[in-house]
View 1 (tube, rainbow, N blue to C red):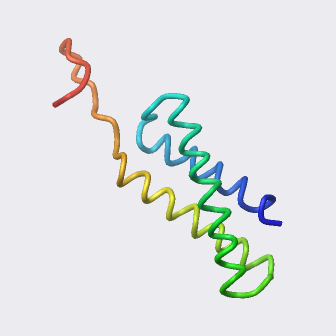
View 2 (view 1 turned 180 degrees about the horizontal axis):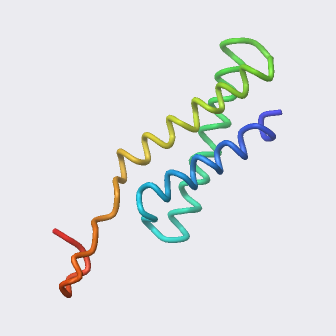
View 3 (view 1 turned 180 degrees about the vertical axis):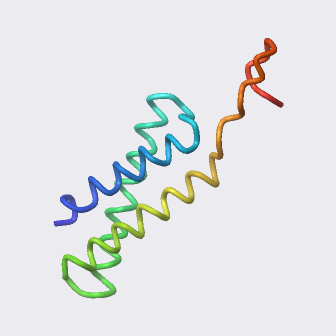
Length: 93
């Protein structure tokens, strides 16, 4: 049950977070964001089951909370990529 719930939620939040931080790290950054999303959704599902009992709703809500927490930590921790200036320099400093 955990994998059926946590994998799609984690992949979705990971890909969305990666796109919101403007694709930092390229393809490796995408994979890292998705991996972190799946892991935190899985742990969130375990926490939901531990707190509220073995119901599918508790697992789903816990996985959702874990995915959202992962997205917030990634977005705040890595931040967006600086925008290009177009004046020969690649990034604004």
